[in-house]
Image (spheres, rainbow, N blue to C red):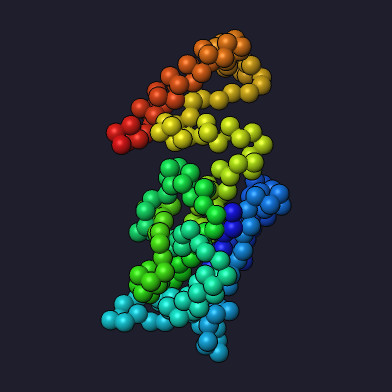
Amino acid sequence: MRIDIISVVPDLIKSPFEGSIMQRAIKKGFVDVHFHNLREYSTNNYKKVDDYQYGGGAGMVMMVEPIDKCISKLKSERDYDDIIYMSPDGERLDQRQANHLSLKGNLMILCGHYKGVDQRVRDLFITKEISIGDYVLSGGELGAAVLCDAIIRLIPGVLGDETSALTDCFQDNLLSPPIYTRPAEYKGHKVPDILLSGHKQKVEEWRDEKALERTKALRPDILDN
């Protein structure tokens, strides 16, 4: 998989890719991530990529021309499965969507900034708009990092145990069951006996039961949907 990320401040997003799972995925060749500074595509002497919005109002708007130049250059070099715009009014990111995107070959992500982008960018180039929640950030960079993490960890071979991602929260529309590790007893609090029994089928039945209990208690909306 290749991911191209377009940003006004690309340095803001690089650090999450320089450690842990995403760094390992890049080093092992499972994913190729490239960052593109939008200011390099500006024709303005001051490398300006934003301007006042027509009709008045607070907040600057990212201009269509530098975005067009950047996206067009990248598209001339390869085909993209999706061109994603990170926006608070996009489709809410969930596990189903992460699973779907992890199967793609080439993705391009545009990080919004300021008040947002000229609507013509969304009309002409964007194939998918994604939000990580109903709130507004200073820019789309952090959201793009979250999206990439959710996608990259699902690529076969990235995680040490490929079955690990299959038992994550939301994969079966349930929250994960409680998990424990050593010691078996800590300050009077014991690990449930069933987990120490060695009976694989009963352990799985217990986990299924607890996952359903937790989901009903903490996220009943998932079951409703």
